[in-house]
Length: 271
Image (cartoon, rainbow, N blue to C red):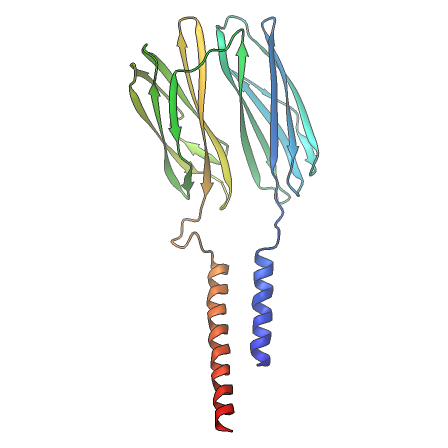
């Protein structure tokens, strides 16, 4: 029984080690914007709500065809924030809503690169409601998969729509833009083939599909968002090797326990 007790202690140690709280980095990004006098001004605030520092943090802000890259923040420790102010020219664009994209690039303590994507709708002059209705489901990605969305035009007028796929740096796609026309109440399926470039197993990434169109002198932006969850490509992706080992060990331990109990019962009956 001493061997069984020692084995049980070892198994419990492995279980506690497996489910102990791991270190992680999680960035929370808040975007503010205001369009005044043909200029868009605002700020991006990124806070580390994880329990591990983020290193070499850089915020990249894109509006229309212009990209602004700020300096690098060497270390963003947990519960601290980093602020970026930005300014873009709004000359010669129609009233409506436009997408502002913020990508945060950073590293962990091992030098591994990560990124996040955040999105904000900027109102220029006046906002207009979108007549597009869409849906997209979360997907699991190991090496490559298809991101599928459906879009329907609920307006009585026909619209030419520009769909743009916005991805973090860890996920890639050969096609990120598709332009199509939707008649009244017409539906279209969008299909983007995405690949795992450098994402780690069990990570989750926000992914966006921008939907933009013009209606007269009005520019209208809508978007769909989903989560891409990175999984193991092996057959037992939901059960890693350590979990499998623990289950087998537990079964062997139970078998040993019942075997010993059976011998003890025999001894008692033979007395």
